[in-house]
Length: 186
Figure 1 (cartoon, rainbow, N blue to C red):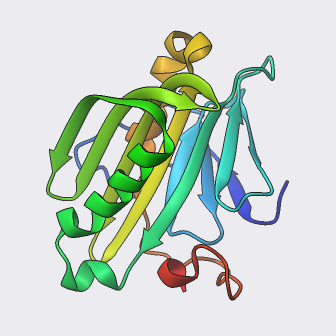
Figure 2 (cartoon, helix red, strand yellow):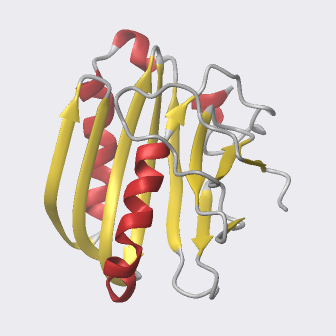
């Protein structure tokens, strides 16, 4: 298991905030450098790539993973800027990186923004840009599923998104100087 994250089985993330509970038996992913938790099915595996923050959640057959990327964790800026002022530039930058970007749905709450889209990120597919804030901490996550498996993974992705929680814990290890998260998690 990569040293950048810990897995705890059978642990429920803190705080419900009105979203569904984590399905029974799901594993809990907790990155060492970001104060959040994310659940995934017990028969799936989680792996991290060499690109910081890039995760792959693979079904039992090992094929067609759900890709997730912790884009940023921002703490200082959210104390002085509104939720919209922090999330808008990050959402704009994603739209510029996705070929044929088309927003299909958006949910805006005081401390949560979810933007669903279709487009091409290496392969054509469906993605979700997900922002969640707790206090002065805001986390930006990006999920992507290739079109060929989007229907098969839809329920799992929805449950994973519902499981995202920011925790009160500080990250287990500070990011190294020059790391892409250095401004947000340290």
